[in-house]
Amino acid sequence: MTMLAFTSFSFLSLCGVCTVLQILAHRARKDESVGNNPQFLKFQRTYFAAYLLAMFADWLQGPYLYKLYSYYGFQEPQIAVLYVFGFAASVIFGTWTHIAADNFGRKKLCLFFTVIYSLSCFLKLSRSYGVLIIGRILGGLATSVLFSAFEAWYVHEHLETHDFPKEWISVTFAKASFWNGIMAVIAGITTNVVSEWFGLGPVAPYMLAVPFLIFAGIIVFTHWNENSAVTKVKFRKQCGEGFRKIVTVEEIFMIGAVESLYESVIYITIFLWTPILEPGKPSLGLVFSSFMISILIGQAFFQITIAKKKLSVSILLLASIFIAFIANLILVISTNPKHQMYDLSYAALILFQVGVGLYFPSMGFLRSHIIPDTHRWSIINWFRVPINIIACIVLMLLHEDVFQHGNRMIFVICVILLFLAILSGFRLHTLSKNHDGLQQEAAWLETDHIVNIF
Image 1 (cartoon, helix red, strand yellow):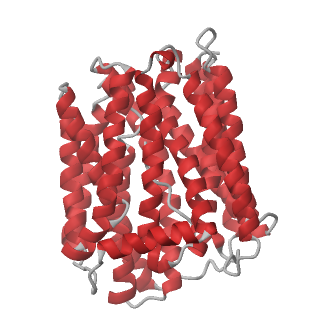
Image 2 (spheres, rainbow, N blue to C red; image 1 turned 90 degrees about the vertical axis):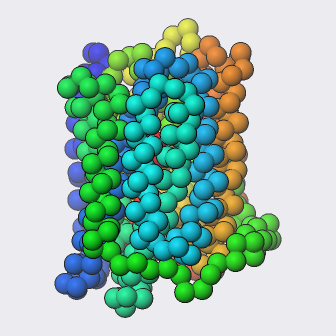
């Protein structure tokens, strides 16, 4: 069986499994009638129309990024530098976007996102390395805005303008997470069609993303109100207090340790999946869609398990880390330079994404219950620093001779990082046993979105 046939068969099989699990998860949920107010549903649709268009444009840019740089003739170490610039821009601008949204207006910042991201897409047409670096920096800025300003606008409108119950916010974000996953799957298939079936090449998805960004901008401009924070954020004070919380509260420190170790491996895998699988000649868009379906499978498993109260959230977090650990051990074997096993690498990456799907809702739940609301923004920003530093250091190792003859040693490093994450996860589990706030009711409503770090 060819790699293309294997990935196609796997995609269809995963679709079947995901459908069954999502149906079971839907049936397991409680209080489905919550948030069915007609005015609330109308407000949700206004938000979803712009947000999901923006997310779809973002997902379109995931599957063929590495392929595009390779198509332009750049080598793996050069491509690694481009990724590093994107990661670094994301963490640097991530600290700024929250303040900018509060001070200058969240609607304005969302419109700014559509312009900057469109410009980033157009810069992908250039074969100049310097121009591509600028494009990656703009892309990092744009994604930082996407994952802060849109949700901040919604929360303010929900509470201050419409005066809806605070509990309904999680209803909207749960729906957004589900449809975001569906958009990601559709985006992968769409990129496959335009890039490979139509033969338009790896730059085509970036040009296709621009109209969706324009449509999102039009909806924001015509249907959204402007809003901003009533009180101004004191940046230095917030950062200082957040850092003190991290170093003085062990539970928060352990959440940061797990998040930094695990998510740095996610970033590394995002870079490596294309060069690992591409020699087997799969459809990259279909592979990407398979990854997204796998994440949805992991999310559905989390929702079913929590609804039945079979396992605690901290145990599910440990399970997600262990799944990732096993997947990376398999990748160490399958990426042997003397005998590459592309099918096994693909299967390991699918397993890894199932773990990712289980990880994000587990971490999101624990983070929302352990980290105080007053310091959440600054603490999460501090967590992003080691995530990006670890990922950037490992990717820059591709310039070293020992790593240039295969990516096996990179996965050895990932295994070590995940082993440390397991140890941190055990400690977090021990600490969280006695935490009064960890109630599992409606946990499916209080978890993170699927976000595109591809």
